[in-house]
Amino acid sequence: MKFVEEVVVEEFLPTVRSMLAEELRDRGFTQREVAEALGISQSAVSKYAHGEVSRTEAILSDDRVRATVQEVAEGLASGETSRVAALIELEVLIRELERGDLLADRHEAAMPELAETEYDFAVHDPDSEARDRERTLSSVRRGLRGVRNTSGFATLIPNVGSNLVEAVPDAATVEDVAAVPGRIFDVKGQAKVPADPEYGVSAHVAGVLLAARDAGLDVRAALNLAYSPATVDALADAGYPVAEFDAEGGSEAAAAALSRVVGDTGKGDDGVDTDETDGVRRDADGAGGVERDAVVAYQSGAQGIEPIVYVLGPDAPTVVRVAREAL
Image (cartoon, rainbow, N blue to C red; front, side, top):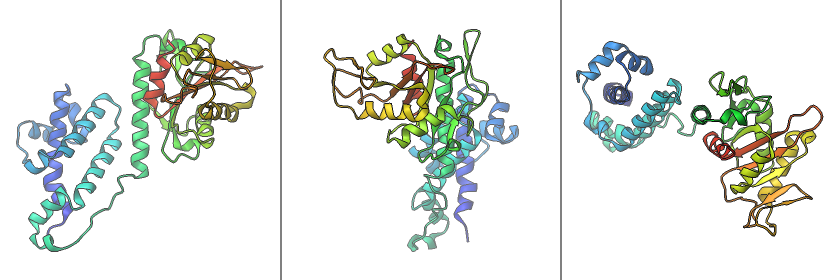
């Protein structure tokens, strides 16, 4: 009697670990760094490097395995993927391949009696909450890399600091929104990110994002920027729908303004116009730029309230890319 888990241990893990070790070495990792990234010993890495570990050709040549290994290796190498996230991705792949697929075939080869038996090893859900949360953290890390690598980004940071946030698909509270602990600040002209993203560490920007989602906007990420007329004009001229809201109205006012601009179908005479009655800028197509992948809300300040611009979009890298257009 042989269990499918034995196929995983004896065939899948040695093959995939060796593939990961090879990918990381190709990306300049030392033997010690490969061992740390994969959570294995340096002697094991040495065996992989010298071909002393048996690899299963059917697994080695599978396109899905190769694609996942390359994605995980790239994430580990860049720091955008944690070891937990890497584990989850590989666990999901394993469960997919166990369900009447590659690993099920390997299992049947080891246990011919199974060939005529219907069975299901769907233990893990590929759309699990854990996977969503790790993927969201990875997305924020990618966005933060864009912040760090953008020359002049510090000029967009308000006095209160910026935060880059992204919500899991079914987010309900700030505990479901990943953000930067302590915010992003301008330190001598450089955008400084103090720590790796975590959940539940942003009340303000996460609150704006959640309010926008509650208002029906299909957005998952947000970034706050320093307000200036030039910033607002640049984003409006780039075709993004832009709406002004009352600073004292808070996140609900921002969400209402965004809801108006996304749902608006009117247009101005000159292509890019500001309607004094609702503070909504519309593009020449009359749709407020709804074809674009982000929306913008801003308030120009009030007593004790710093003026701020918010960019909201489908993910963290996208809102960072949009923010760059204001530079």
